[in-house]
Length: 219
Image 1: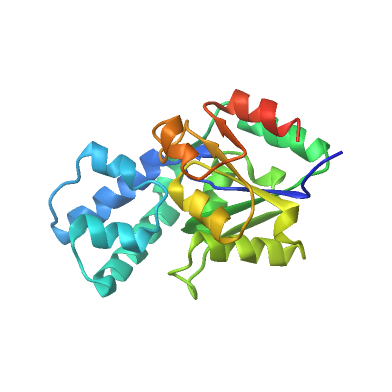
Image 2: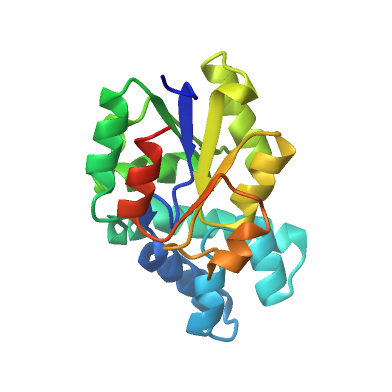
């Protein structure tokens, strides 16, 4: 018997390797503003966190300037760089198997919602999802927990009906703030090792899509 009714998914570094598109957008905005070039290590750390705070912390700018930069970033992704993203091998098969078992599947991402839809379409994953929830123009400073709540409310479900899958502390925090279970993956950009993931007391830590599939198909 299935334990949960819905599985919520982070997008960046969990469902898809969106790094190349995100890197391109950051570099685009950096060049537009004449800011110092971002090194590769810093770029990798920017996949997943809230976009506005990433710009504030990386370039030491005001929130107002960061909001403007985030708009330019999302515009660039929406127009072109979303196409650089690819689904992780085996992910489509996993989602298909979960749908056959009767799960509702939804994306809960800190990515702009329109960009998230385009990105999932580019990775051929859209058909597997019953809902796609991200940052919207009227709520640009949304936290992960806010987006999780939107998803649950859309399906009229309670927190105990859901589990979140994600690759970063922002996912762990979003699950914790909603008092819901969390499954961590370490093949993405957020958690660099099992020790980091354990901080959030996940139900399971998956080092690969294959391992994630084995676990999810048992719950």
